[in-house]
Image (cartoon, helix red, strand yellow):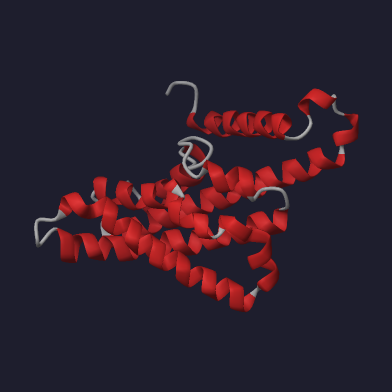
Length: 193
């Protein structure tokens, strides 16, 4: 598979959030404002890309030579948790407003199944280091695209909440909108799937 196909597939066709349904917690929790969603998307992009490099090297340089492939999930979680702590410290120092806006969701990147899922998928697909980095970057870009689009939709919905029936205000319209956005992205995969 070419790098171009990996990017198109990961961003649109097999979007990590809207088609594979990984990373839903931060997707729903941090998508109230576009600025916060963009910050979260960039943080996930950084962590996912760096973690793919780190997990690839740990897997092929440490686990495989020692016959410890079965430990990949535990080791990957430790690597991702360390990287998230580093990102949290950097964001706290460089952008206190973004740090406050992300709140509890920044440490939750550690448990974001999208980050761990991409690290494991890269190993399962037996990608080289370059392909693994491209795969994780493309998936992170897909996550960022989805969360920013969803945040834009939520801002528009909040602006027109007064005209909505009371029964669908708040969480119900958020879930309906997420479902419709997911269906729209599934349309990229085509009918003959």
